[in-house]
Image: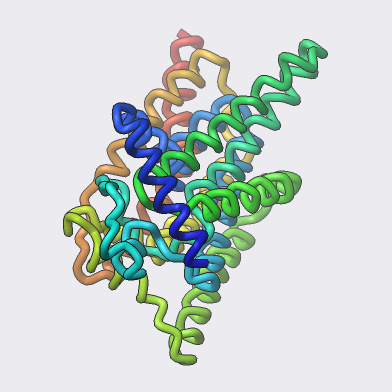
Length: 339
């Protein structure tokens, strides 16, 4: 793998040299591809257009990110920003590359979580949109437009991850292919009408099985914290290392979102029936609410408290989008119509 990794470093160097003037754009793209964007941006936008597609987005995002975590623990993938120093291959020929605020993720690198979750989640969006356009227009060309956007988005996210030294090219390709397959498979069976017990059992089951897997691998002498140590050693700035990029943050986000999805469907099965104007208003208010929820500062010590609060934060996300905001909008718009 040394040759593959080395070629990936030189590719990243050429990419930075030729497109450094696009730095801000690549950083925006990598944020769009962040797995948490699936929960905080794609989910509300999709839900207020199609409830089934919205539920599918949060379901696919959670399962895909959880599988990505398991794959990373099994594959021990390196990340470019630390491999440059650890490999010892560049002592006399140091690549001219730089790190960014989004570079220093602490989990293993293979496959790319950004590419994998983006491929899975956006497949739900573009396939739903493509089917809708074809049913209305019967135009193959028009219905193919979302799929073209899908390919462009995956390429852009992949390039952004290589540009900031977060992933090697082969990790991005592996993540994109795996995510596409998961998106196709998982979107076929969406738990729209499942009881709360299903989501509670699924969420706790994922949490406990992952903790047991972690404990079992540690017991076998496999140090799953190796990537965190390397991230701290080779990251250019200590403040760029954030606890919300750690593997257990992904786990608590996914389990919290699944439990929150079950609770939201329990409180209001079928959701609120709103015309287009109130839906747009609900989307705007939900987006503002999720923005502030995401910005809530969490204590990082002790880590257990952080992960617990991080779990609660993502339990709240579906409540805001599916129950609280549309319920309030329905209440006020219904009153106005009656008056």
